[in-house]
Length: 515
Ligand code: GTP
Ligand code: MG
Image (cartoon, rainbow, N blue to C red; front, side, top):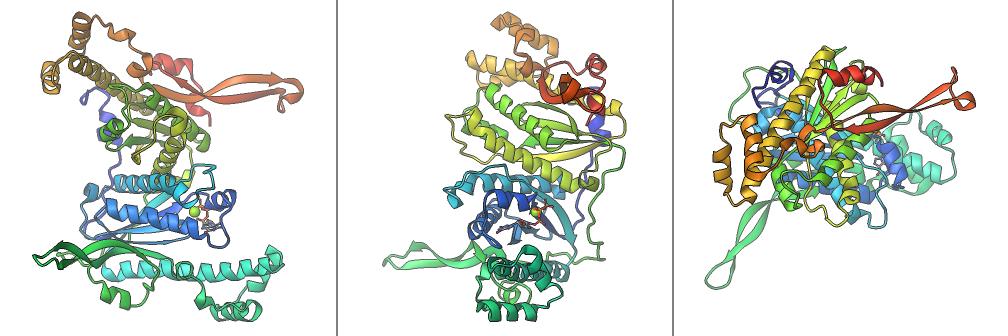
């Protein structure tokens, strides 16, 4: 299993970038295509209070979930999360941190949508990308946050003027012209003179953005013998719309950006995004976190829940539609690998953005498709998926990688089938593990056959082989409807459960080259 002949593809090709130590880590999440998303959902312009409050609730959930996030700042469709300087969260592995953050954020966004928009249906799955940047000291991290708040001010002041002009009858082009080259002072005057608006009276959330942090609050912990409350300061996650450019807030909240014990010996370079090498096939592997717990909470069948697997396949098929550069997908259990064409220019091949947007999009699709597959089961826990990237310089290595995942599928499924048969027959889980310890594939097949009269090879093929998805030509029209040469091809996503050996690739020579 772990040492199969294919396993070298993990050892030799998987990226494992660790973010440098003793740096504050900022994960900045940004809504993908939120211009369109806000239009489709008729967000108010320029600021939709509900949409912003939903973002703030997601950020609050992040601080409650991940204790190493010490501060968050959000505006519009973006949120920055600051991890404490010495964090050892996932050993500072960039791909883990990014994918988990963005996937959890997306999950909460979808889950809480109806709390903020009870009368608006979610028309398309929202998703976000993320990048991680490292800041070596207190000055640079403070400057980073100040930069985001200055940006918020500039954009909001411009947008406020722009939409007031448009609402007063100007065309969008005229409004743009009227604002061209104006300074902050001019815009304030325009608002005051033409619309009797004092910019400083606009809601603080719009002008200052939202800061999320732990605030000391006096909380009653118990009562004394006379019934008097005994209070202690406790840290509570708080959202505020305050100035974070000046020193005042930070002087009053010194616990937030406390520097670690070790001083830096030298100033590290500010992190630059990592580019995946050109002309390499990119594989993004998505994997559900704490899936054991998730499957218990939703009473999935053991060892395989067919509906849950079909939901994974449906989400993966939609991924292929959303990312045309994905040429192949392979999944089993709670994971899916997506192969991007070697020439993909998605996000200029920036690793962090590719893997974060994939993990977020997959989470969102999984959640929005949930009720179609489980109409009677409420989604009671937020699913989240981590993602990793792998680079394969040759197609042969991609195929070996896929064979490796299929070997894992086989080994895991054969073990789990035996394990659950033994448990169902009355053995304890410990006894079942003991019985299976050190057994080979052949032994397991024999155990199933002799003890349970089961032929492993007759088990459903989706469980044994996993699922692969790829584009398949389904129809060729000729004549008037056809393209230039008289024929037109239509490609559909096909879900298949087959052996990914050389025979498969010979039969489908075009899969990996089409996109
Ligand atoms: P990418 O991030 O590159 O995928 O594009 P994007 O469309 O998300 O644009 P960008 O992140 O640069 O800007 C965010 C966009 O979200 C803004 O241009 C707005 O159109 C939209 N948006 C964010 N918040 C609000 C809001 O409160 N109301 C409205 N109407 N639109 C908003
Ligand atoms: Mg955006």
